[in-house]
Length: 102
Image (cartoon, rainbow, N blue to C red; front, side, top):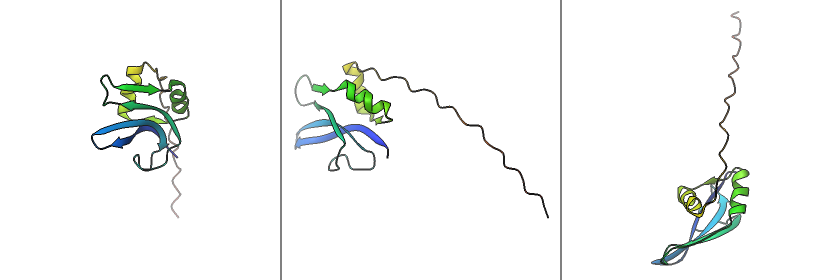
């Protein structure tokens, strides 16, 4: 199961606010269930209101969760430092032996 940190739209028409949630990548962001709520984002207010639980975000990222581009920019603005992921090491390909012709 792949997990993603993304925004879930709430509120009514023309006055939306968003919950920052951890959910299964295959489920719908709008009506699908989520695993955990990490904070909220209200762009309607001036300045926009953002509350983010940085410790839990880092926990989920350490477990392999991906972030949406919007969440990544919100985290950068809040000063949450995401640890650099180690470079993937490619496994050497194993050559298969050709079967002898009969």
